[in-house]
Length: 221
Image (cartoon, rainbow, N blue to C red; front, side, top):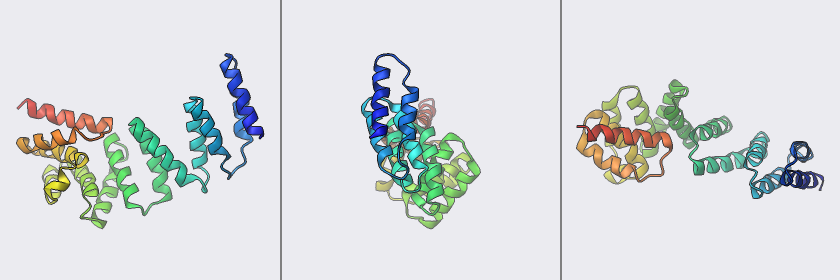
């Protein structure tokens, strides 16, 4: 297969310290659109440790409506593993355009927008709408409560999450947000408990900073 031949030539050139750019670009150009060839080439690149080339191919595949969902989910999982909030946001922006009625996607986009301070008004609206549509969903409630907290309405944020069961609130990912909000409301003893639980979650860097800042605030009291 032509594209594989070019890819192997690119690999050989790179291994001998020569410029492999042209051969690699030719390999990409020879992929048949709408086929699985793009994933086969990305898999080769990944196998060789060519991370940038593999990611470029995945993003290219994401432009194809036939491959968009599969590829964006792959990219999402990859960036979750890397804890790369900015790239996760980029993936979710694309997913939300594909699935504007998917509440989980909208909620996740709102959450990352709030963490990154990007388009906060839209993030607030998405978080509020997701919560209103599924008021018993604690994940959606946590995002909306965080949006309220960032707007300065700490009392409403605390009251909103306080309506859920202790078991739901003690989930580490939820506990992190609840602890931050409780610390903001001045309920330090209860905040400390939830922040300790939240610190055990697989947090994004921005989330971890929020938890650590709240813990520092409590420690200084």
